[in-house]
Image (tube, rainbow, N blue to C red):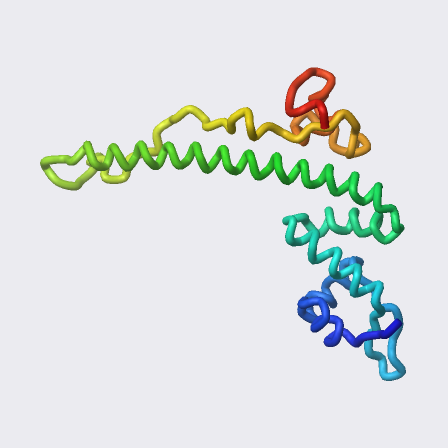
Amino acid sequence: MGTYKIGQLADRTGLSAPTLRYYEEIGLLQASARSPTGYRLYDSAAEARLQFISRAKRLALSLDEIRDLVEIWSGGECAATRAQLRHVVAHKISEVRKQIEEHATFERQLEAVYEKLHDDVQPDGCGDGCGCVPELPHVERTMLGHELRLIATSQCTCGGDCATSGCDCGCGCCNGNIASGKGGDENG
């Protein structure tokens, strides 16, 4: 098993040396040793850990979410890591769907403004109250269709950690979605 200085590890992982130092500072990474001259040395386990972190970052996970996952992953518990990741990804899906709904609603508002700007030309020209920049109209909130429902499982994947009134990740214990028949596909 070889060791790498921080610059070598940065080259191998595609991450910058300052990023690696920051990951050390926040506890996501640890040097395996120091060289006689004081350089941080990293082993292949650190490289694998950084690859795991990089993949998690591409899933838009926060550093706190990644920290929780890395703790489980570093224990070698694949099933536990996957269960936690499924739960986190279900939350991400829920967040993205809410953003899509908000953007679709805003799009409808902009379309209404666009039409109003075309139709409401003032013959006297611009001035106070002419409507050149109309208010966004109220429109019904755009809701995602049935085909984009939440992922739901019959088993709890969060361990009860997110059983809050606002949680709609689809987990069996969150907000009672499965028990009450709300939410997504109960077949998992």
